[in-house]
Image 1 (cartoon, rainbow, N blue to C red):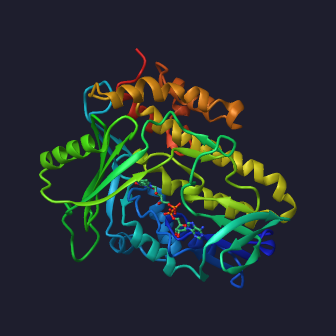
Image 2 (image 1 turned 135 degrees about the vertical axis):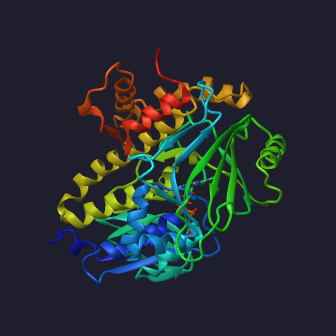
Image 3 (image 1 turned 90 degrees about the vertical axis):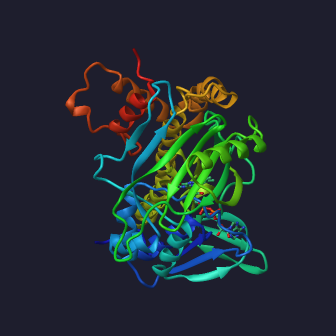
Length: 428
Ligand SMILES: Cc1cc2nc3c(=O)[nH]c(=O)nc-3n(C[C@H](O)[C@H](O)[C@H](O)COP(=O)(O)OP(=O)(O)OC[C@H]3O[C@@H](n4cnc5c(N)ncnc54)[C@H](O)[C@@H]3O)c2cc1C
């Protein structure tokens, strides 16, 4: 296939070696039609990658096999992976019942629980790049490309730069949409022994689910890998103290029969979307572009969408379309991320079985802000009206068969219906 953009995409930089940068570098190696393109994979070895994010969506299963040329079974084993069929919600909403949000089609489609460090190693094996260990001090647009400045190294010009340097240091209203309707901002992470039995001869076929356990100070995510199980308590540091969270965490582990654990980290995180994810020459990806708490494991999926969209547009469109295409791509990415954010924030709208300070804050103060934050005039996209349409559609007394396959930003109507019925937030 002729790809008219390839000739103006000769020299590419990927900055960052976390999940996002590793995925982008492997994707460039795989998708660029000319083997003589130049790819620089740049990262500062003094700045560690975040190293969390063990849940994904089914689309990554196929994509990892394509990027690595390995079978799904091999990929799963190389990643200490288990098969994730959905998320088990415990104690959420007002319906007073536990429920599962399945991938569609239910109990057929699966994703992985995986080790991010091992995934980065696997992606590096499939990447053909020059590796540069250096600190980037600035990226500036220069004509149809961008100039990257380094500490202790001469600057270089690239046709396309993927900026995967991780979370911004602080949010700025002019540059970021602050998703303040999402009520959490910190994760307390513990690593516990594995609970899945491995088969030495093949991948673990036993279906597994990410558990999302509502607790008085937020919720606890439980992710079973073959080598360990991760427990992370997702909280709001402005509402609960670390001492009360740790003590409730101990209680949950004890109830679950977990007698030992390794304290991993306390990670603060912002919930946000960068207003300019792509300008034609610089593409922010991963935690540099957008983040919302891990409830629906949207982060790796966001990277897949960001990298896929930017590479497709740059390879398949000739350079004269660059300035016209960039705002269209940026609007699409903003709408996708904001739709993810609205879906995740809505999970808190019916509270939980706990009438605690956290859940009152989440339901009564944070979630009601979503209409103001996502106002189309302020964000430049129609994610909010489209989200409202999905809620209205779901609440109709009869849903026409022609609407059954509707989706908003990859979440199908069936996901909305499963969550609404599980949480008990359908209209009466
Ligand atoms: C508690 C928690 C749970 C999560 N769970 C999930 C999950 O289940 N599923 C999911 O999909 N996602 C999850 N995530 C999201 C996860 O963080 C991201 O998918 C992933 O870590 C992406 O990170 P990144 O690659 O963008 O940045 P990072 O991992 O922070 O990597 C940044 C890279 O940039 C480099 N760098 C930084 N500054 C410079 C510089 N100036 N010059 C050169 N190099 C530089 C660093 O060396 C590093 O290599 C979770 C996040 C949190 C906080």
